[in-house]
Length: 79
Image (cartoon, rainbow, N blue to C red; front, side, top):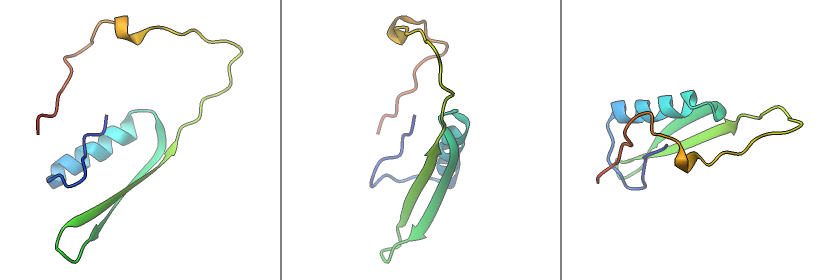
């Protein structure tokens, strides 16, 4: 889950973690993060991605993931 918000203040480590999360989640084939310095000294970020495609299936099964047990506690961003 991406936790970057417009106007947020982030460290280089936090931005690297976000990029790592996006590239390893399995939903995207390719993820790029580009930064550009704005005239006011802030950094404008552009995150572009190519979504992964799944092979076609003859059938599939739906499950209600809301009823599944949590494998680890949910992390909340408190800002």
